[in-house]
Image 1 (cartoon, rainbow, N blue to C red):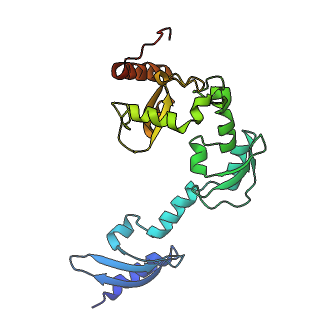
Image 2: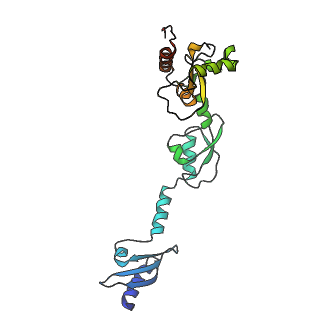
Image 3: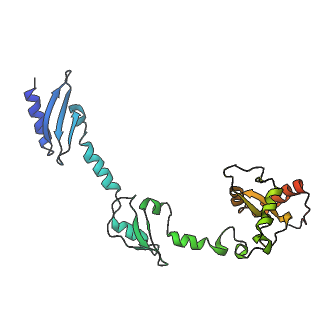
Length: 235
């Protein structure tokens, strides 16, 4: 049976905050659960004790929290202007929705606010700044030089693989691929003698692009032990 007096008191308390009481459930031991509609028409249930302690509409609380964390389009524009970027987007949804920009060099791109805060900038400029002599693996442009004439001889390259038993010669090979390549030990494309060529899988060949001095000595040692090649150790 509905406690009429309690219902009216609760209804008056809720109406003062523009909440609309829908129902009261008495669960005994002076415990009441109230069902209400907030000023934004969200329907929810809460104990009267929690209401007295300040508990209100959960959906409204989440909405206000999201609103407090929301970044305005003007703030994004201000942040981009400080770095010479031009904001091209006119609307902003949330911090994970990409917005368009024009970088100081005139490149058009897009980025989310989350990534911008983590330091992500123009991807085109990044590629340019890591190309040529600005890249950590730059070796004076030797990768652009042509190979020696012997490199065009498929039978010659096949003989190198046969010598190496059609196996990657790196003892630390991770066995992630079966595809084999011929690697220039000293990274000189014009030096195609058998003492400078070794069979590697594509994975190991890619790894050899870093710390080239160490890999040069590593593969020379391996080839010397297996084939008995001697090297001038001026390196």
